[in-house]
Length: 213
Image (cartoon, rainbow, N blue to C red; front, side, top):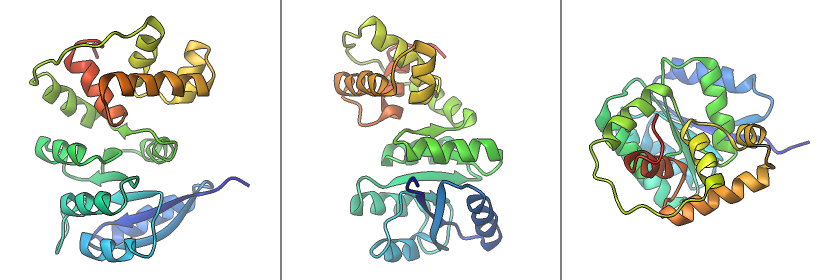
């Protein structure tokens, strides 16, 4: 039996927490391991329980998601945080992306998006809903391009797929490559561009006009 993905919820509205727990309970590959009503409580519990993925709201009393994400990632650098918020304003999105979160969904997102986000992030990838990606693209277009690197033809094919939010499995099927080969190309792209993760790679590709969405 494969290991389940351990998920922790940080959300100040009890009713919404219950809704998330119910959805998680219906996912066979996920295990709910804890909850907190604000960032401060979460950080205390993080000292004892380290989940695979944290579902993080932004606006909460005592300590908001921005500060909680910043402190949590300093405590556990490999922690994966999926932001789930009502607030899709540019300032919140950019701030969370800069802190290194693994994904961002609006609370208005549908169940398929939520489940896909959990599973993509569990695989070590990033996931941003279409609305959030649109904001990121808008921001990217305001940033000056940097010196481009040399990217091979096959790397470019993989890069285009990554920029369209495709998973390693989906890319492999499309390009007739094994998942391990796709991962190899992805890692080469991250290294060449100096990107810490796939979302930073996407930002690099878009602001240098390597890929047009």
